[in-house]
Image 1 (cartoon, rainbow, N blue to C red):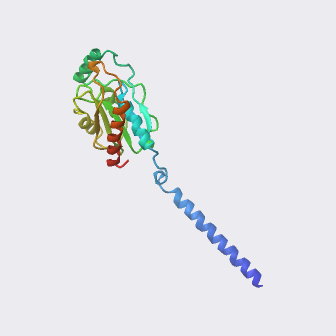
Image 2 (tube, rainbow, N blue to C red):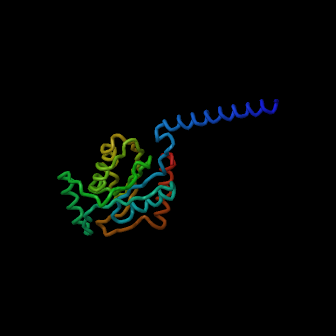
Image 3 (cartoon, one colour):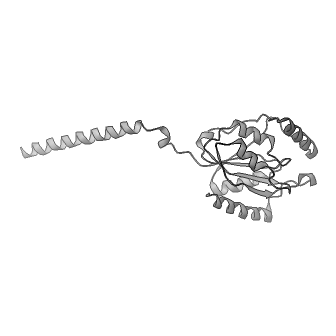
Length: 209
């Protein structure tokens, strides 16, 4: 008789535990998806002409583990420096935004999107403007980084903030790249690359990465 009572109590407890478990499962099913679907690591979107901005992107990727997406216009810009300058001047004057070869996939999976670009005519390169116009970066953190030919970042960081008003745009990082008008190409290499790396690591640490 005592054994039957224990068995009956055990069955009741098992039934209660099962109902409790099913209740938890049902409640969990009602939670919004984002409660457990966490965004993955950061993405680096970079536009680079001579490879210097791309070199910075690779340093950031090494530091953070972020993915890299190289931004490319559908129609390449002229290789000749003077022809490129003239085309960019026309596009800026007309407000022209060039078509892009493609956009990053699964952009919604990233909470942070680093944005890298050279200074072109003291502004963002037109392909970068196109990206910021087309991509949905709302509620994302956007740390911009820049290379320039000696005249600084110009209006690039301010333009970035204006084009993504729903994003949190961090303080930008800017470093001298190549002076293409002087025939320079990739300069972020060797001892200078190590110097840039140290500055970049300090910027990333200050930004919480």
